[in-house]
Image (cartoon, rainbow, N blue to C red; front, side, top):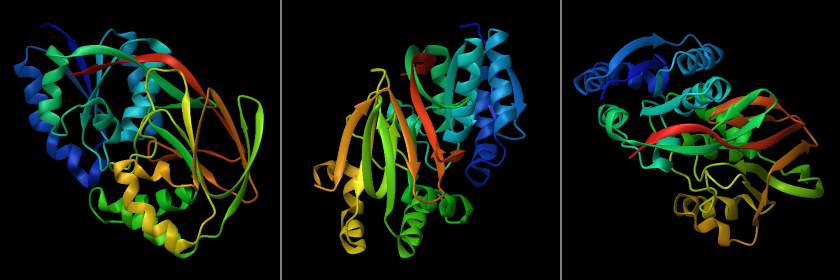
Length: 289
């Protein structure tokens, strides 16, 4: 299949995992008869520009890196049109998991030639779009620690959660879900476009990438012991049956808190509270199995 591909690589992703996967991924694309143009990112904003340029040029934007890179490239594509291909090369690769894309970047590259296109929703905060989950509160602290650690792979997110828990105290959040006010006291607030984050944690097991809605997940104040005991349940999505976990649906969510928090999405900080996130239905096309 003749197709032009912009292979967009984050050299820092996954502690060098993306760079190690690059030769095999590029070879798989070329072996499939695709014309490949290689582009290395300097930062997230540059990745957004590369995605926008690829869409404008009629190229498939193949993002080789983690969820942060994928979200930035998708953000560029929703502005210029075009198609996204996801080549996992980060730590968590949760967006690829959600779409059933192989975790091996070379195997994922083969989909660019023979996969199908699927229109999915994005979330947006201000001018920045994201593919997965935007969250804050306890998640803000856990993400910051995970991003700074040298702990490899998915274990970085578990490490981040355990370290964050040691110094955590409940926060008070003032929320608006499609204009309806709600006060929440507890650990975290999340607007889930996709089902999972943090290396396979099924935070919102019933979330859909195609319904135009967020699953808004909140975790109320409980003891640290109880919170820790329930943490493994998140990997199965079973935590939503706990009485301290509440799930609602909304197209738009406004979040304010009683102390400063960064809002994280796709593993990166995208805003400081107060912040508003909203859905962008069917905003980008992705190649899937």
